[in-house]
Length: 212
Image (cartoon, rainbow, N blue to C red; front, side, top):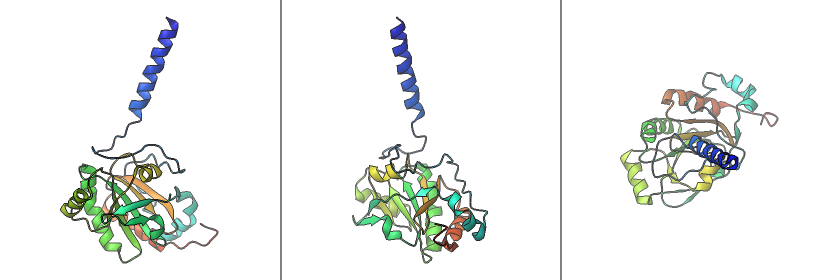
């Protein structure tokens, strides 16, 4: 009897752990992974707060090592013409990767902000890359791009990419600076003005070799 009770308790504990580990983000037909294998596991803060937004360029440079979350993992995604897009293609650029789903309210809320910041900084070594995580035909993704009037490049990836970037659902954004480091990640839409402050900072910083 004691053995049966121990087994039942173990099963209950396992079920509780599985329920607690599920994503709370919005979206239905997505391919995501919650296990990170690269050393980047994402941050716990999903409120959209960006801790550097009120820093000066000098303060950012002085505190750079403490701001870096991780080295950005290599990735390969594909544009809607099925051309490869890799991390190395953005060398010297500030890159904001947003993982979106065509049905997710969080993505629809964020699209206007992403288009606005992409348009403002597109001539300044900055780009937004929107990676659709839906398992849908390319034609359907293109329809969503057109319907939402996205001004930034759209792509689709693989479970490996989502795993590397600790994506647990649509609405996650990852900011990669021109030195190839992840310097911010957040869910939902923090607002165009807040993002503009942060992007300007990372476009303007200049680090020597000892600071990287």
